[in-house]
Length: 329
Image (cartoon, rainbow, N blue to C red; front, side, top):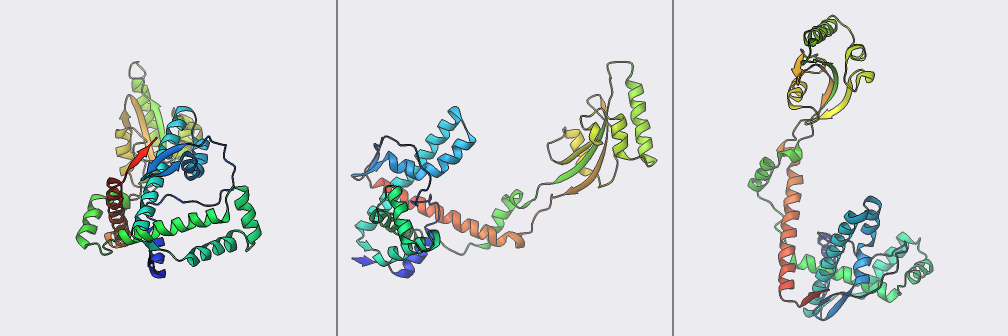
């Protein structure tokens, strides 16, 4: 039997975190009783519905708090399909491990169990065992699950080897194509006075004169907030025309063009749009800046390394699936 060394296992646990759905942990919340059955067969080994639900249960609880009806049903179906796919892949990995006659020392699993008892149960082994019993787990079953986690992590490490050095050309290319990722959203703090033009009536000239009068008062030093409360017909009138912080595509395009190009503190001229007269003021602005390549180089490199590892992992798993007999129900 070939034994995985301690260093091999340590690396395996780190790399094994890539694309790995959380594996078996002690469950503290009661789940509804589910009639069990066969969800899949992988080279003669059975995966049950209860195993699928056990893996998806934590995320199912979160979905039930956010969705209802048909939308919830679809989300649950998609989640359980992902959980089943993950269980199938794990079973293939463990089978490949056994086929290669690898072996993981039992003491590593014992150390992991002791760590769980120490960190989650204050060192109280009896409480740990009683918790397992309450969840219909034996200590042996729990150790077996932890052993499988070691195996999956170690096998992923062994088969998913990446080039840890990404070429500068690839990094620069990614930066050019994804500048939006490194650009903060531009926002402005806007105030607005809107005076309806009533262009279909004889009052249109009078309304324009009113807008010009308001603009003149603002130019003479009147407070924008007070003018908005007195003259604006916008829904923010009572708040002094305050729209708060807004992003692009909040306003109609002609108004947005003016607003986002105005200096802070400047009051616009009268803007005639859709038959109404607008006067804008930008109280403040932030965002819109792009981080330099030097600032984000290390983040891009890590991302590209991770993407490469995920691609290698998927090719490896695909090769295991091709050689396997897999039937889902």
